[in-house]
Image (cartoon, rainbow, N blue to C red; front, side):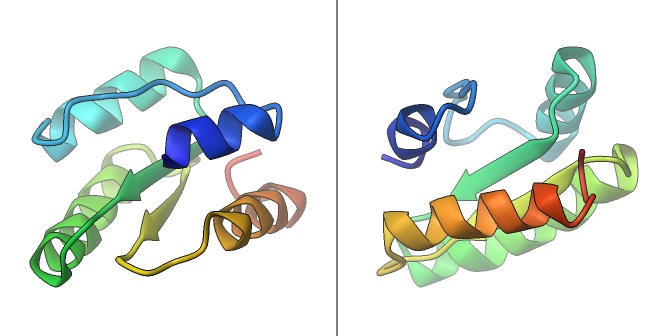
Length: 92
């Protein structure tokens, strides 16, 4: 849903496997020249894992902004967070 939501907001979205290692996400982000990586979760435990993965991605590819979507987050809020992150110069 996050990828579809961001695509609707004119972002180029790539849907990656749910269990793709963080190192592979970072490598893909670097190769794609990504400004933003969104890790979407459906459970509280997955949110914890995504938080750790976000740290690894940011460490490996410092110019990207990583947002983590948590269970119950509104997709509209994700769009707003993505716009604000790039407007602030993080990941731009």
